[in-house]
Length: 116
Length: 112
Image (cartoon, rainbow over all chains, first blue to last red; front, side, top):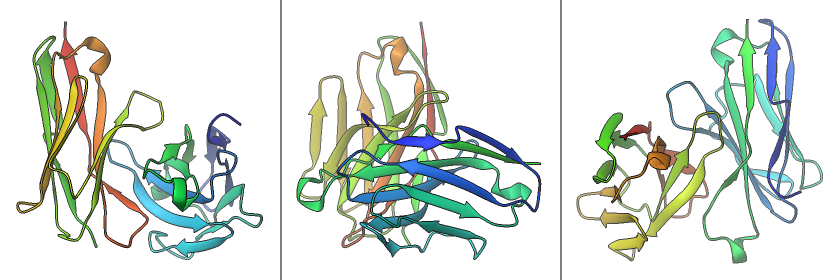
């Protein structure tokens, strides 16, 4: 596609439920990032994939959060036993192969998660 | 880890005047400093960036300056226009690191 696509755009769930958020990066981009943006804050790094592997998952807040990218393209962020504090906009971004990488992150529109 | 502070948190400027936003960072090995613009309900988009081997970079009405010794960098917008109203985020990438650490944002309002 033309840009990074994220689904769903909005998700409302109840405390304790399981949630999956999907990211479809720009075709050919090898690097994929997940960020979390709370109201009035800057994006907070969660995890970075280079190809299929998680190269840096130091930003995942706890073991309720997990992300996969099995074929090196689409990624899914999974949140177990959701808590009200997980409410935020979850942003996905991608960048091209390192040799072509200017450093720019191409963001999706985000998935707004609300935990009631 | 990297610590990025951004000031001011809000800024109102008369149309046509200049706006300056400043960020400081903690890791002296950081080597890449982008600025992103985020309009309400939209995705962050890169507007300008600078690398550590350069002191200043300009693109039309936008410029970024970097002071590596003091570990701060600034965004300068001249001849501001209503469409410049948005939230601006600075970010920093450390040496050998692939992730960006973002500042807390500055809400810029251009007063017609």
